[in-house]
Every structure is written in structure tokens, then in C-alpha cells.
Length: 555
Image 1 (cartoon, rainbow, N blue to C red):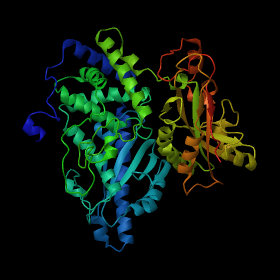
Image 2 (image 1 turned 180 degrees about the horizontal axis):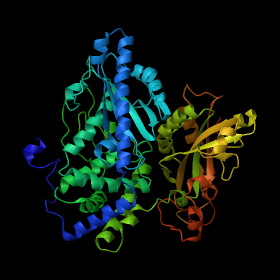
Image 3 (image 1 turned 45 degrees about the horizontal axis):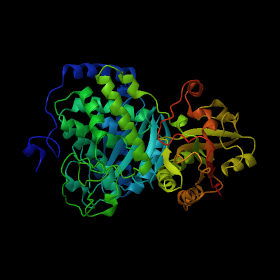
Image 4 (image 1 turned 90 degrees about the vertical axis):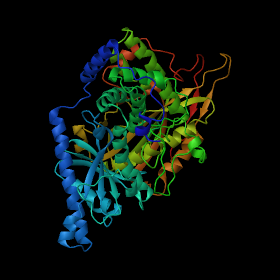
């Protein structure tokens, strides 16, 4: 039965159709003021810049289709008629992007222009655009894409070659039949746009949804639980959770939706799935999420199911550790919003920064390195996309309560004195990034240009939450993570690893030895002089002897 036939949006009736109270209107007003203070809205000038860049990309896609069409023997008139169109999706299409946000963009091509053409021909065209930087194609990704910055605007350019001889300007992707005869990677690409559009159709009030989502997005980013690739919820999954709360309280305003988001989600009985509509059948012989049929679907810890056909789980990357971390943050949020409603706390407190780099005594630093800036973008992306497998392996280590991945990497440039030193750094030897190294700087350090021998590095961090001792008299605990790391190295290197140009190192690092670049200016000193909480899950080893960590060296 459709939502229209039921008379409400969603798979269950609303919990309440009451309008918001005077107090809820007050906290909505203060919430919007705080979101503006937190700089979550971009200026009109920035919005115009995005529109200009998108216009340039749309024109380039048409030129690309035309040029490839001519090269493949089509007449000039047929090449002009072949079209090509872009669709935006993600936070930009949802209307919740902020300053510096990237734009997820789908490039739709006619059937004679292939994905191979996209990377062989369109990627160099993007690289040649005026103002284009950091252009890197990732054809082997789960969803193949080209990442780029154009005039300072970050873009993720996905590709879909449809079974059509021409792409008309009025093309819509809503019809399920458009997915026929497409391979799975293309279906995934097209469904990004289809999902975003479906989300906007399934909420009772789009502006309330956008305002509430902007809040939850900022909260998740500040608490470092916003990253699909690292096993947390990505933007789409957080958006679906907010959309479900909007369905359950269709007449509530943004502040009330945020409060109910934390209240409902802190009590949600996972792995009960979050659904925005009934799962529908369609024209494809493809797998649709169904835990009754597929054992792997039953294993999803936090299933949030996409509403568009074919329905998939948007949160299959969630591990035992990231699930526990997100649940803890949602519980903390639920306590805080109660205080906000009672007038005992402010919205600013909801957006305080995470404590990841103060929370643990032991960390693993994963360092991806290359000798070439362009190759580094791809190699770091490959390593990051595999980190969740390392997390799952670490979860089986004795005495480890959880493996807590941070949501982003830190880019550095190591300036070397000789070719030999650069080669040693690449192998994970002396010179691998350490706090205070004079020969190391951020990507924008002017001294990098003068260095003849450079190694580009991206460091990822995993906090190790040690299981508390059952008794103070228990012997010292040992964390032997060498097997997990050895298996991870085999996986991430694969067949394309170039020993001369690429490197990867994994190091055990104490919390007191973390590099300065992971902290904001003055953060470490302020934390050291203040009182540090000892109650964070897995963040504290019981007194007495410290755990010993055994880490395999990278070959």
C-alpha cells in the first residue's frame, strides 16, 4: 500500500501529529541562530560560484559526448544530438551543504560513450579546465568517480552510461525501467540521484527536514561519526534517519525534530531496520535487501534502507566498534537535548569538538606514502577505503574492547635531504612523520616547492580501547595486533603496489606522542591543564601497568 493510500508518509502511522509548542518554537529559533553562528550556511556569492562551476561542468560533459561521438564515427548532427546531462545529489541536492562542501555530480552519457571513455577522455578534459586542481580518477572504486576541485569548489564526478542513443535535456531518472540492462556499478551511480530525489518526496515538510538535517550533520561531523568509508554513517544515512523522524512527527518544527531524533534513535532497537517506505519490486534481476533471504543482510548491525528501487542497506560498513561509538554519541546527545529543552544547556554544547585524540592511551597510525602528489590522492584513497577491514580484524584481538577509526586522514609532505633518505622514508624507516619534524609540513607549506626530494604522506589514526582489567591484580595485558596488520598489508598492497613509488607503514603510537598536526592550535595545552574525563568507553586503562602493544612492521 502506498503512502498516499494510507494517508501518511512512512511504513507506520505518525507517533504524533500535534503542532509544536511555544517552547519548541523558542528552541528552534535559538537552534537556527546557533547554526548561523557555526557558519553552516554559505553566502550568496558562494552559491553563485557553485552554479557557475556546475554550468561549466555541464557544458564540458556535452563537449565530451560530442567529441567521443565524432571519434566513434557519428555524424556532426548525431554527435550534437547525443546530449549528455549532469544531475546533482547528496548534500547539495538536499539543500544542506555549507561552505567548502563538495558537490556530488552524476554525468549521464548515451550508450556509445563508455565508462572507459569517461576516464580516458573526460578526466584529461577536467584536468585542462581553467582553475582545476586535485583531479584524480578512481575507476576501480566501488562507485567509480573522478574527484576534482574547480575554482575552489570540490566535485565528485560519477558516471552512468545509459542504454539510450541520446540523452535529452528533459531526462528524468525516476522511472525504474531506466535501470534495465545496466551493470551494478552504474545502477549504484544512478541511484545516488534517485535516492536524493526520493528522500525529498518522502518528508512532510522539506524546509523543516533541511533545517533539522543541517543540525544533525554538524553534530555528527563535530563528534567525528560522519564517514561512510570509515564505518560510520555517511550523509545519506544520517539524512534517512532525520527523514524518518520527520515522518513520525509530520507537524513538528526543526528544533522539535532534532530533540525527537535523539530521543527516538537512543531507544531504537537495532538491528530493526529504518525504512522510509515499503520495499518495492522492480524490473531488474538484482538483489534487493532482504534479511530473510540473505545471511549477509541479517548481519547488518544498523540497517538503514534506501527507499528507491532497488532497496539497499546504506550502512553495511558499520562494524561492532563504530556501532558502539555512534550509539554512545547518540545517547550523549539525548541527555543533552533534554537539558536544552529544560533551559539548562545551549545548542552550542551539542556542537563541541570530539575528544578522539585525547581519549586513548594507544593508537595505530597508518601512513600511506608516494613520491608523486597525483598518485598520492589515489593511493591514500585506496588505503582509506580498506581501513574498515583492518578495524574488523582488530576487533578479534584479545584484550581489545574496540578499534576506533578517525574519520579523515592528515596530509603531509616530508622534505628529504637525498634520494636515499626519500627511499628510506617510503619504506617506513627514519623520517616517517613525527611531531615537530623540521623537514615536514602541510600540503600548503611554501618550503615544499624548494625541496628536490619529497615524499607525500597521508596518516590515518585508530584509537585502541583496551578492555578494563577485571581485577587490579591481573597480569599486564598484551595487545598483539601483528597478525591483523599483516593481513591488512597483504590486502591493501594487492597487485598494483609499486615499491619504488609507493609506501605504507603502520606504527603503534602513544597518546602522549601524537603529532601536533592532529590538534587545533592550543588544544593540547588546554586539555593538559584541564580536567580530563575518565569515563569514555574504552578510553582508559585501569591503573598499574600499561598494556604492551605488538605491531608488525610493514615489509
